[in-house]
Image (tube, rainbow, N blue to C red; front, side):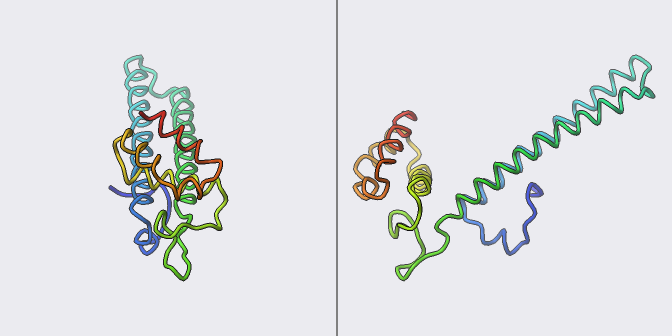
Length: 163
C-alpha cells in the first residue's frame, strides 16, 4: 500500500507506534476508497454522456470538476481526522527518570484529565478486545480511578456501552 495521505519521511514513519501506523493505514484505505469511488462516478458519467452523444459538452467537464472537488473535501476531512488522532496518540511519547510514559507502568501526571482519559481508553481498547472482559478489567483497575478522577465514570460508561 502506497501511503500518501500524509507526507512523512521514512525516518518519521519508522518512529510511529503500532497504533499510529494502524491509524495511518486506515486513513489511507479510506482515501483510496474515496478516490476510487470518484473515478467510478466520473467513468459512469462519461458512459452516460457517450450514450447520449454529448461527450463534448461542457456539462461533463463541470460535473467532473464537481466530483473531484467533493472527493478532495472528503480526503481533507480524513487527513484532518488522522492528524488529530496522531497528535493524541503522540501524547506520552516522552518520559521521565522511570522511562517512557506508558499507562499503567509509568503514567504521566502532567497530562490534563481529558488527555489521561484518551491514554487510558486507548490502552484498554488495545489491550482487551472483548467488550465484557474490557469492562471487567477496567472496573478492577484502582490506578485508573485515581488517575482519571471524575473521568473514571465517563470511561466506565463508555466501556459499558460497548457491551
